[in-house]
Amino acid sequence: MREDISTRLRGISAALLFVLLTSSASAQSDEVLCSPFRTIVIALSGQYLTAADIAALNALAAQTPQACDRVHQSIAQRLEAAARQSQWQAVNEEGQIIVVEPPAPMSWAVTRSTFGGVLTAEMMEARPSQEDINSLHPRRARERNQVGAVVLEGRVTSNGSLVWRVEDESPIGWGFGEAAIRAAALFRAPSMYEGRPTVGASFSTAIAFTASPLRVVPYE
Image (tube, rainbow, N blue to C red; front, side):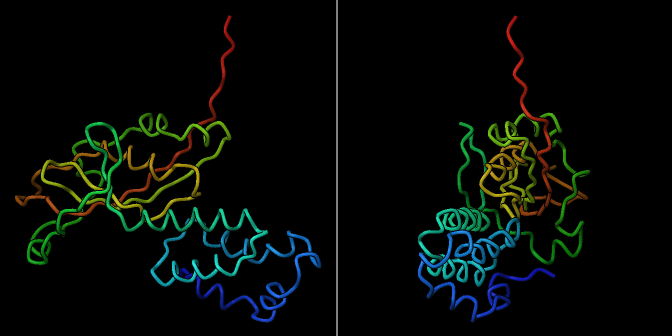
């Protein structure tokens, strides 16, 4: 069972936090000062944040000492990723990722009488190949041999394309979420399935970036 950040915060001794927050920076190294805060952020990496989690993470940012620059940076990245989780996105004709309004989900009456309003990869008319995904592996991540994975929720539009929402991205800060949206833009859903329109049907997928690092071939 996933624990939200407020649970994790409660799991840290209040006395320990009091000592850390009230002790002078000169009395302890930055490593000792920042370690508990860093541990909380690391523990949340790759997890979906609820509204309560986001509020608690903002509270953690306010409590984290200014000397803990890396912790503040990690918190900012996590909050940015959490903001994207609530946004539906698509790739427009110019290749830009834009925020869009999703189509309404299929009604209960329709989903009850047909395929359930949920598509699978096998039902798709087109989908990205592993080569497509590898080509979108963020350059900085590939150069550092960093792999990643993103879980996306999609919803079918009237032309068979899908709009997407990031449900989980791990690790954050490497550009995998944006790369996954671009890869997912290659999915195409059928306009009809089992005699029913698919507009509003949902589709979830995981996209893994496991390409080998870029290799520089010397010119001869």
